[in-house]
Each structure stands twice: as structure tokens, then as C-alpha cells.
Length: 331
Image (cartoon, rainbow, N blue to C red; front, side, top):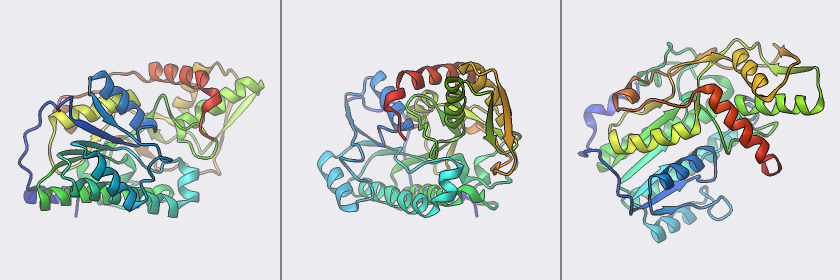
């Protein structure tokens, strides 16, 4: 069974078009990497009634609180960007939290949005939903066709559940909700912590720390041979709004650049951008993760959108943001 089997059972009758800039728009997770970029994008597009709550103001794992929030705010549009996220170390160390927390966040927000008739909702997942050995580039039809990467299977299962809940709402209630699956994201607002970051911000911090310490070498996890695709978060935000205005359908949509590089190549680029001139070593006793994860973005291109920020330019602006916000980064 694949996630596209619901196509012939879809009950939605909806023609995509421009969203009402004056309607209330809730961005769940508006302080995170993706959510903050979406917030900036919507402000730039002159949406006038944006709603967001920090995790301290609203715990999305608290079902009663989430339902009370929706009852009070009654948003017309929602982007669900809130999630517990992390890199290989965090995912493999805390699989229970990555499964339980994300399932509760998703179910609470989606159930509350359903009860209050949210017209248009975008659920954000991750490319880790696809099988570890999926044929490259990965099409949307690859979902549920093979075994997941063990280092982040708990997180992936939670996101797959979210996709199926979106499809179920479309079939049962006819609401025009959609799902988008981004590739590896990076940019302003990322998590640069030693234990919780993804590969690219982890590399930025590691090489930048090496420059500050005057280190002669940097040691990275794995062999450097896996291939990864990277998308700047501002591109991701633009893609989300574009999909909400130009796409409708039960199947999730891949969001990426359609191009990948090896981890060794991205490490070399990061070293160059931060000014590290020492030696890069690789600890092959540490896991590599999935050998390759490149998304087929033809469905996204068919909807009229392609990425515009080149990797080197995005890296440079991300490093500049990292330096400017060094005193306020998440640990």
C-alpha cells in the first residue's frame, strides 16, 4: 500500500487560488526554523492577521489547551510546522520522544483544526518518510514501499501518520488539506546545538569552533560518502505558500532542489565559507545514515515552483546569521 491509494476516494472539491491576505492564519511552530521562515514569507506577502504561540505559551502536546486555542482564535488557514526535530544522534538516542511528542502534536492540532473547520491546512513532514533504499531520485509513490532508515524511523513513522491523517480528513470530511515533504533544510533560525542539530548546522558549528580554537583538524561522523540534498528555508517557505495557492491533492508533495552533494563536499564548502584551512578527518565508526536521499521534485515543478537560492549563497548567509546570533543560539 502506498499513500497515493486514496486518490480515487478523495472527497475534496476545491480549486486552488490566492489566499485571503486578511484572513486569520495560524503558523504552528512559528519560532522554529521552518515556521519562522514561513512567518517572514507571509509578512512579506502582506498577510495581516498572523497568529503564533511559543511552546511556553501553548504546549501543543496538551490536547485541551490546543482545542481551547482553536476555539478562541478560529483560524481560516493553518501551517503545521511544529515538531520535535533533531539529527542522527538525537533521533537514535530518544526515539520514544520523537515518536510520542510528534504524534501528540500532530493529532491535537489536526483534530482541533477539523473541529473548527479550518479551510486550508498544510502539514509539513520530512523526506525521512521514504524507505532507506528507495530508488533515487525519490518519487512520492515510494512511500511505504520499503524499510525505513533505523536511525530516524520513530520520527518518520510519526510523519507518515500525519500524511495519512491529512488524507483521511480529505476523504471523510472533504477539507482541502495538503502535505509537503521537504528535503534537508538549513538557514536562519536553525538549531546549531552540539547534540541536537542536523548535519549542515552541525558542520557549520564544528568548523567555526575549529577556526576560533585554531584547531589543525576537524573530525566528522561517518565516511563522508552519503549524498544529501539541501534546501534553504526561505525557499521552503515560498514553496509552502505556493502550494497552498496552486496545488490540491491527497498525495504528499516533495519539496527540494532536485540536486544533491556528498557529505564530504558539503563539509568542504562549509570549511571554505567559515575560513577553516586545516585537515578534515572522518570517523567511520559512526553511522552514515541513508546512503542517498534525493527527492524527485517533478510534482512541485508541475505546480509551478522551483528553488532559487544556490547552496553556496545560502551557506554564506547562514554563517553570517550564525555569527550575528552567537549569543542567543539554542543549546
